[in-house]
Length: 101
Image (cartoon, rainbow, N blue to C red; front, top):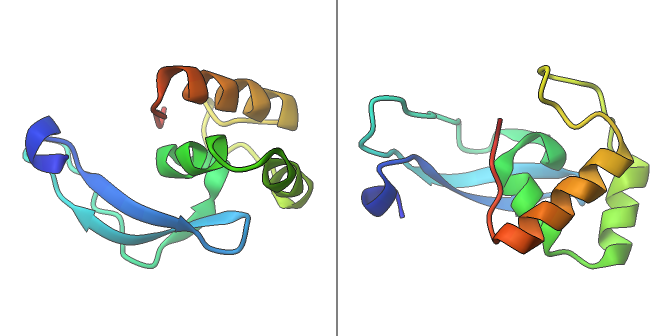
């Protein structure tokens, strides 16, 4: 994917039901590169890979995520509450991919 798109690609897991952990990455060839540290963990709703993983989890897993996650804004584009997350996950399912804004 990285070679075809020119973008940095990550392999990630939902580590504890709340955090996404980056377990591997391939840097793209484009000018801007996201050099995320392997082992880095962050709330899933704050990353494209985390949102993509959440979008295809069971309703029960998403509801559990909502109960456990903190929705503190990291940027002006951050998902700030459960309703925004649910709308975003619906969009991801429709489009088939997630973005990190």
